[in-house]
Every structure is written in C-alpha cells, then in structure tokens.
Image (cartoon, rainbow over all chains, first blue to last red; front, side, top):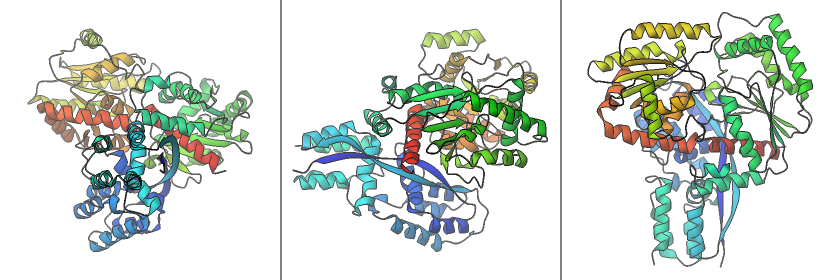
Length: 204
Length: 401
C-alpha cells in the first residue's frame, strides 16, 4: 500500500513594485505579473480569511468593490479555486471578466499593490500507511497543510481533485474520497473542514 | 518558551515552525537595533531572539552605541523619513551620523554571522561591514513611502547594499527601492504584560484607581498624546454619541518628559474635556502595560482614530482581547480591521460616532465581532507568525545564493 506523506506549503510576501490605480493599469498588470503573484492574491487571501465571514473571496475583488466596481467584484469573488488547476487559466478568466465591463476604466482608484508569494513546500515528516494513521495525521497537521493538500496541490498535480481523495481512492476508499471531494471548501473554515473530514474518516 | 505559545497556536503550526527551523540549523543570526528597552522593536526582539535560539538557530542581539547628539540626528532622520516637514538634514547631521556609525562598526562584530537583521535607520550604516556570503536584511518599521528626498538619498546608498528589505505593508515601501522588498507585518506577544490574561480583581482595581464606573459602557482610545492620533476628534465623536447613549470615554496614553508637543496636546485635550466627569484623560507612565491591558479588557468599544499611523499594533492588542475596533481607514489599521467583520473602518468624526452608537446598541454584534477580531489576530498578528515569516525569509535568501 502506498503511504501518504503530509506536507505543508508556507509563503512569505514580496512586493513586486507594481501597483495599479486605474482599472486599465490593473488589467495590464494582471497580464504581466507572474503566477506566484496571482497565487498570492487569490489563494493566500482565501487562506488568510477562511475562518471569517468576509464579503469577498480575494483581494482583487475587495479592491474592485472598494473602488466602485461591484459587479466586477462579485464576479472575481465567485472564481472557484477548487476548479482551478492552472494559474494561467485563472488569469485568462479574470482578464475576460475585465473585458466584459470596461466602464470607468480610466477612473483614478486607490492603488492596488501586487504582491508575490515566495512559496515553500515542506515535508512534515508524518506518514500514513492506513486509514487510522491517516486520520491521526489529519488531526495533527496544521491548517497550512490542509490548505495545501485540499486546495493548492491541485496546481502542482494539474488535476481538479484533492490529495486526500486521491490517496483514499488508491487504498480503495472510494466513498470517503467522494465525500471529501464534495466538501465545499469555500463555505467552511479550515477548522470546520478538518472536523468534517475526521467525521467522514471515522464513519464505518 | 515555545511550549508557552502552544496554547495560542495549534500543534501543526508549531511543527511547521520546527521543520522550517531544522533547515536553518548551523545558520548564525544577529539582530541589531538602537535600544534594549522601550519601543516596539525591542519588545519583539526580547521574545524573538530566545524563540529563534530555542528552535536551534543561534541568534544574538546587539544594540548600537550613541550619545544624545547621535540620537537627536537619528530622531530627525526618523521624522524626515516618516513625516517630512520644514526641517532638513544638514552637513553636521551627516557628519554626526557617520562618526557614530564608524564607532559602531568597530564595536559590533558582525563577522561571525551568516544573516544580519538591521532594524530601522539608526544602525543602517553598519552595512559597510558586509562580507561575502553574508545576507543582510534591513527591517524598516516606519513608513518611508514619501520621505524627505535629500534624507532618503543619503540613506539609499546604504539601503542598496542590503540583500533584502522588510516593510510592514506595501504602502510603506519607497518607490524605486532596488533590493527585494518583503512584506511582513509586525505582531503582538500574547505573553507580554500588555496582552496576557488578567484577573477580574485587577481590572476592578484599575477601575477604582481611576474612578471609572464599571457599570457604564466605556469607549477607549489608547495612544500617546499626539495630534496624529486625533484625541480631540475622538472627544467630538463621543459628544455626538452622548446625545443618545450613556457612556464614558477613556483616552489613555503618555508623553515623554522631553516631548514638549506631547504635553501641549495633553493640555489641549484636558481643555476640550472641560468638566465632563465621564471623560477620563489618563497620562500614564510609559510602562503601564497592565493598566492598559485592563482598560482594553474592560472597554465596551475601542477606537483608533489616527490621522497617520505606523502600523497601529494597539488595534491588534484590543482585537486580541475580543474587542471590536473602530479604526481609521488608513495604513496598517486597514490591514488589521476587516470592515463589518472584526470592527469598522471610518473616515470621519461623524462616521466614528455612528459606528460607536451601533456597537453600544448591539451587544450581540459586539460579541460576534469581538470573536472574529480575536481569531483574526490569532491567525495573523501573533509573534509566532512573525517568527515563521522571518525564518522563511532567511531560508529563501540562503537558498537563493
């Protein structure tokens, strides 16, 4: 049986030196910045506020709302990161949204500062060889690790499924894998998600 | 010591810290700043240095030497970077700065270290000691986005010798800084007297000491007596609130004996307070951490109506105690408060009054926002997060060659 290796992804923030103060310059920057910058504003923000009932899902959406673009803000906020396996696709989707509504494109806004995530994946040294060890591991690791295995590792694997479900399928636990796959990670905090996963894993 | 923090963060986060630190075993780190006592930088280092050592990274802390002349110049530099005015850096100032920098070059031995954190502009010139293979990081704790140009030009030659800089928020970064600029917000220490849990008795003792009525709601602003903290604006907001709500206003802060402007502002505030028995203007000694802690815990609503702010960690201190904070929509304050979730961001005296009234009227909302505020700080503004960010940065600089 293959073993599951628990990892975690941590990041520091680096200012790119790029800032935008109009919708037009925002769109231009969105085209230019690297993937880790898009990652920072979409994923890091989802992680940062996962436990709070915030109005919008990412910092792009917040900036758009704050500067009087509520429709664009809603559309950006609704981007489903669980369906994303490639930052380039997400970038195109955002640019498409911006192209759909160009009113006020030169209006002067508060600046948006583009920040890049300097990402580092670490091996936590915890291994699971069976369901019981897997359950223990999930109870032990931090929420950064849950976020990595449930959300951002999709970008590494290029598949719209999470690491936990993939491994559960490998060991023949199709039903549990399916249930975890169906969890709406955008609707719960990672602490709640952990409890739900532990409950799924405990069911016989 | 790390164990003591385990009740504030989960087991998994501690494990992550240990794993990141494991990769840095053998790396020797030095922090240099301008004082061991007083101020936010010293407070952070007081905990950060032993925590790094406990994680197996040999870490030292040195303080530069200087006399009154030097620190007058560095205070002037600080003001010119943060809030440029009519004053200019003159030839004598530059000579004084360089003279003491070279004295410190002899005094502080940076050679045995792999990574050197230089905090703020006072020790910036030590970069002339940089040796091949070392990583030097400038940790800037102030807003240098709109400095006095001449002063910045003088410092820039030092700044550009560093491998990386760190700022609290991207808004504080000077345009055109040619070295990588990392964004690492400051943090609070949950074990510090400012933040640790207090017994009810002690909170009551503080009430009695200042004559505050424990039965009447309290609106609190903690800040030094400085026009940039807008204490008069807070009193005006309170007066609007008082038309409909019974409450007390506490303005707690201090001013240094060598700060004539602080004393002037304090007197102005007392004058505006007049004979209102429900307004308490408390000029506290600088180390009144437990009294401030008690006032924050006792407050119904906390306000931070600054006009300009470094980061405003006092906001996180109140949030940590489960208080919704009404703060100005500026700089570091807007990075801490999530509008409508952990408190409110405001832009005017009227807006401040409106939000104070909303919160005084609604206990359930206060409790919910207070819970969110506590969680927000736990997640993003505790020293353990700060430590992790430093370790990750060091790790990325070393791996980057």
